Image (cartoon, rainbow, N blue to C red; front, top):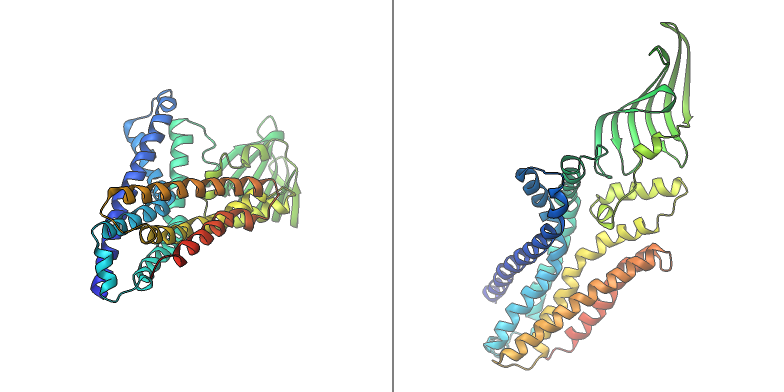
Length: 367
């Protein structure tokens, strides 16, 4: 029996890799056609263009994996059904539940692996892709909206110059802050050092700040503050850039996204969209398990036959399920963004609906 299970799992994995590669290649070509005309205006090198699209591969693979596992399971079992191998398996005393368990375990493991990859490889690669596009191709000095930068310098209003050791553009956090204020003759008037700074709507809140004032070349006064409010007119608009698209939050590490939500709420901003995306980062990978329920059940529900009609019908049904799944995800995100539904329900609504459909199909399989 274990040999049979290993055979089925190995066949699913082989077909999964082929289908996933095809999905990624198709989307990559589509993205290339859409973006290459705009890139040509900036005349980047072929190496930079290649690196940009290579860095997008992990994200595309992560997004396509649930549908690849659906199609691979469906294909393998449709082939077994078509060649009457499922009938032979049943006649050997192996029921549907015994066949389904290892396949569903595989889909569940894949879901967990996708979450882990999203938090490591996908997040880092997508951030690099965004940096390449914004900075190396389009020459926007600000870089990616969610980029972590070090040793940042910025000229601000009132003769202030910011020197920042660590800056997180997504969260609006800077660490190792030194702010110099100089006059028109470049004489040092004030130096402000702080351990950390957080953006709060209309000001920087600096922690463990030390303010030194100067007269001539001599230090005139030193003051220490546990918390220091710095009102700067133009610096927040330059430093704090919120996301450009939904992908910017979907590809951000869960812990950074959670911190972003805290920052937004603490600053009085609406964080419905970010909270919905945070839940979706957990919900979407489990589509692999949910769609696997459909993929393994449909071949058993359809009449056993050598005809290609049943095979094609099964593919058509699952492709329709995939489109409807994406549709419900999109609707859920829209409802969560405007606050009509709670973020958790908005992100999981597609999973709940298709989990119900999957269990219904699973329970209606003839054992």
